[in-house]
Image 1: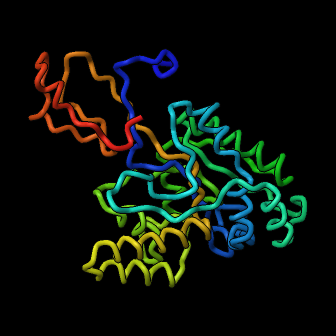
Image 2: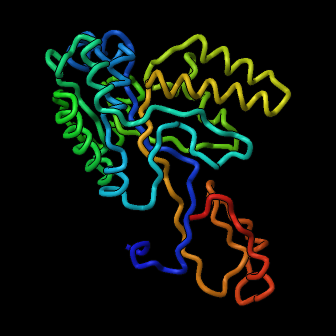
Length: 283
């Protein structure tokens, strides 16, 4: 609402976090999910089809409405100096239909009704979960069961890999690409999708032992590209940090990690206002 009113004291920039879907990738589900049935999401073509068939712009413009950038990559752009993600998957419904047919589900026929979990405390996730179900029905001909559950139980279900598809997010803990990429090592306990790719792990290992920064970032970009194209996760949008900065306050720098150096903040100091830094990525 403040953005639409063009409030001059509202400042925002891309946050250090991404909203996405996590997809369970093992050949069979946990016994608590569809009685341990065979998992169509184990086929990369199915995962890619689900990603390609989503209109993410509809989600950001009609549901979240906070200026979020549509995401085709996992790492938020412009938040780490020197790092640029390689291109991810675009929206392409026709390609999605071809891939789903190649996987054995032409027009969605024979595709099981998978549950899509979301935590009921998050009204935004409830809305875009419903939108995803409608989009996949319209674009791919598949039925998804939308299942809202209480937050603590939701976290347990995802952590124990007792799910098929779930709405989640990740915010980086420290200013490095590895805070995102290490989550999907095959050995990581935080790898909720149970996805494993030896080439991905090998690139992370090489990056961990690389002393040249540009080379290291290039290795991590290649690793992230594998993740983005094999789709154990489906990036939806990158979060936005929004802050109200009152007139007469200087030294507040809106930034991806929401860190404020309070020693630089001044009230009613025109010199501080003149020295107020410009942050890359500010909208």
